[in-house]
Image (cartoon, rainbow, N blue to C red; front, side):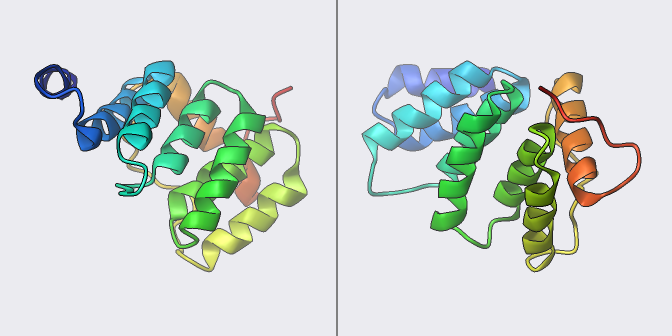
Length: 153
């Protein structure tokens, strides 16, 4: 998929949707800096036509980079834009858990449960095992499940 996205962007560098999709694919592949760059490029090329959840994607990339403050800021903006999108809540809850803000993390999980009963997903697209572990450990800790991780510094 990355090669197809790269080819599409080489043929049409103004293809905003292509930049967005390339960013999403890069998150799944563990290329977080490039993911942020590509999603931001899509926003610059098409600021009025939002496709997908760009702020949530940027927030998740910052989360995987362990830049939790930047991630939380983006994820809060994403929730303001799309209050019914569960992934933003999941990443924000995991973020707060890893920052040691367990009360805030649990409050986010409560808000998530008002949207969906699925708090901790089992089918994840993230290829990097460390990314999956970071995400799931934070989310489980936020949800109050045993086997969660201790908060990261």
